[in-house]
Length: 139
Image (cartoon, rainbow, N blue to C red; front, top):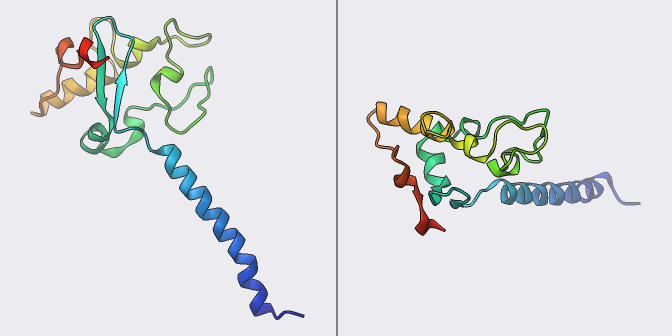
């Protein structure tokens, strides 16, 4: 009969292997692309550098931009793409269409423009003119 000392490592090893596989898979799923092209605006697509925004703005807090899910549309992941829920036209139960997820029609308020205006007020240059973000060349 094997001793207790020889069985313990055999019992721990599968647990460690599963844990490492789960951690590796979670890290791959949670990592967004460094650069995203946000399409759908008649003014042109927006080239969004997620890595720069995450590192320099929002103090690396995902929930500064990615709000908690709503009961009408529960989240499928911790941080989802805005367009997963905010569609044009809004899907059933949702009030906010794609554009409003970023800013209102006149770009006077909303997630992106609020942060850009706040950055400018703090002396950090952030674009607030439409063409500074929206460009047909972006796709």
